[in-house]
Length: 124
Image 1 (cartoon, one colour):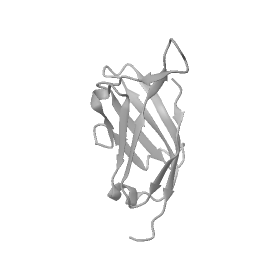
Image 2 (image 1 turned 90 degrees about the vertical axis):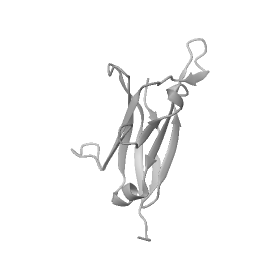
Image 3 (image 1 turned 60 degrees about the vertical axis):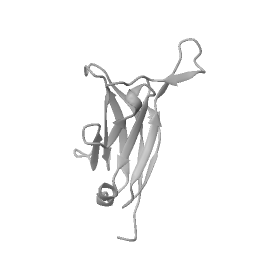
Image 4 (image 1 turned 180 degrees about the horizontal axis):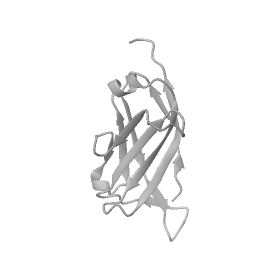
């Protein structure tokens, strides 16, 4: 599966919540999409200023609560949560991607990637 491209806009100092539905074409009709069952999968996301930067500005996972596989994963739905405190600590825009990991860790797929655009706050 090729990663989708989606640019995330984040207002510094504000809570950011996004919900992503992962779908793929059916074998019978490539024009018809159905949810990917990601039951028991985990997910991870990193935001870096530049793709070549050694350290991420922010790392979100299912383990730290930044990403949540919803509805037992049957609907292919992942929620992204960045707290107001976390977004206030960000200082620049960057790039990101999100990966899902199968329960036995034999499959890792990048499902989404794009620009992470930070709108700096004035009121602090």
